[in-house]
Image 1 (spheres, helix red, strand yellow):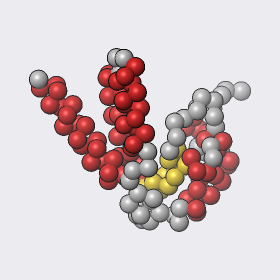
Image 2 (cartoon, helix red, strand yellow):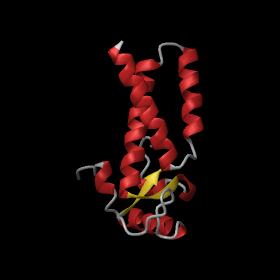
Image 3 (cartoon, one colour):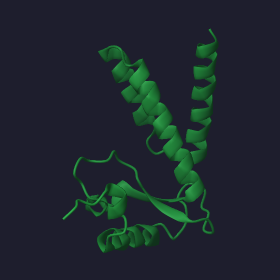
Image 4 (cartoon, one colour):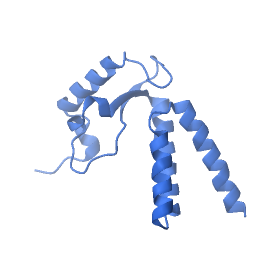
Length: 129
């Protein structure tokens, strides 16, 4: 039997049950913007663990985000990962980036979005040099 892709695992009843539990805990609202009308997603707030199934994460490792905030935070995370990969040429810079990423933890989406915009401006300015 063919192994399921990670995205196919989100159709599993165990994930659906976990997802509903997290959304219920969060009052069926985005924890960032408090929107209750936009489609809601459950976001893994910790890095994905190799071979872990979506439902194997602890409840406090998951949060409810609206589709818009989820996309924004995903874009910010991917952008920061790109900076990290391109910037960490030595242990000191890697540790500095780790500290910056740890400070991001717990920020609201609008705060992260502001940081993302600042980083984007800095990146563009460096490319123009």
